[in-house]
Amino acid sequence: MNLPAPPAAVAAPPALQIARPALLSPRAWGAVAVAVLVLVVGVPVLHLAFPQGHALHLSAYYVSLVGKILCYAICALAMDLIWGYAGILSLGHGLFFALGGYAMGMYLMRQIGSDGQYRLPMPDFMVFLNWKEFPWHWAVSDSFVAQALLVVLVPGLLAFVFGFFAFRSRIKGVYFSIITQALTFAAMLLFFRNETGFGGNNGFTDFKRVLDIPLNTPQMRVVLCVLSGLVLIGFFLMGRALVQSRFGRVLQAIRDAESRVMFTGYDPVAYKLAIWTLSAVMCGVAGALYVPQVGIINPSEMSPAASIEIAIWAAVGGRGTLVGPIVGAFFVNGAKSWFTAAAPEVWLFFLGALFIAVTLFLPRGLVGLWELAMRWRSAAGRSGDPAGSAPAKPAKGRAA
Image 1: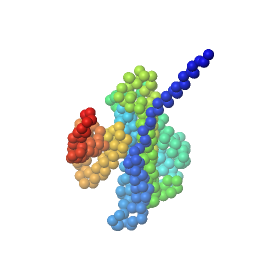
Image 2 (image 1 turned 90 degrees about the vertical axis):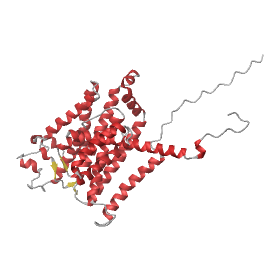
Image 3 (image 1 turned 30 degrees about the vertical axis):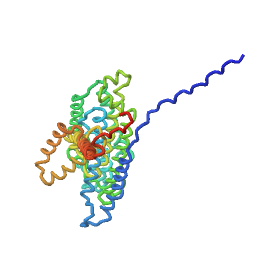
Image 4 (image 1 turned 45 degrees about the horizontal axis):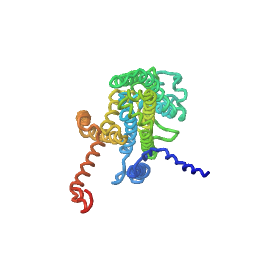
């Protein structure tokens, strides 16, 4: 008896795979390449190749100013990761910036050696206070590698411990912002005291060398500026990859509806603590790059106003966009440099009016304004195109 052949096995459909978006669009990659080229080639050539007085010469003032703003942009980017993508508004990130600066400043003070005013192998403020030996927390300050590790570890550890207790206690919103500001203010008062070994209200200054290389040279000035820019670009690409990953999507879900995220089985505390600690480390690195370029670090960097300014940069540029806070840092600090020279009494009024205008009318900041202008331009182009003004009529004999 002939039995019918069994039906051919039906192949199972391949598993659906969600394509991850590209890290950057081709146009964005082009912008990154242009930024790297300007930093690596443009700044050194304009500052070193052309003599002073030449029309193309980039002065030492502007090189230092750009380097300083690049460090500020790193802080603004760090703020965007926690505020724009996780909904955590910190008014204490100036503390992490200052801690990174102090860690690098300790090494730079040791590099002075016996070239200080008192010609002794101790910082001048310690000699003035009649200290005979270094405090315990200066034990590894003569090692660049050790201090570079402290630039990352000290802000990161403090942020982790603080965030662990704050997030587990479900402190959020305005209460979290006030507590971070109080923490920063308390640290500022502590660092003002001479017995802490951080130079009191004068802080650290009069730096001479880094890695035994003189700081006050055009070449070192350019190196620090270029390094700050490359670190900023690296952090931007890291942040872009982070927010496009599953981790970033969970962060945005926590920002929008934390209780629903908890009901789906995720632990918001772990995600918030991770991004909070990373943001603090980024600010510490920015502070370490900032100090050798400006030549000073003191407790004023921990003032509440300094931390509020970081939030303003992110808001003005456009939080939740990554590139917006960078634009905001350059716009606000560029305006500050101009106003403080041309009309210093007007600067604070301008800053306040700018923040109010952005809060009321531009919730996505300058980047949102640019996007709106592009949409208007695109809509105007379509309305002026006769072919696109009305749908084409269907051909005869075909269904409409």
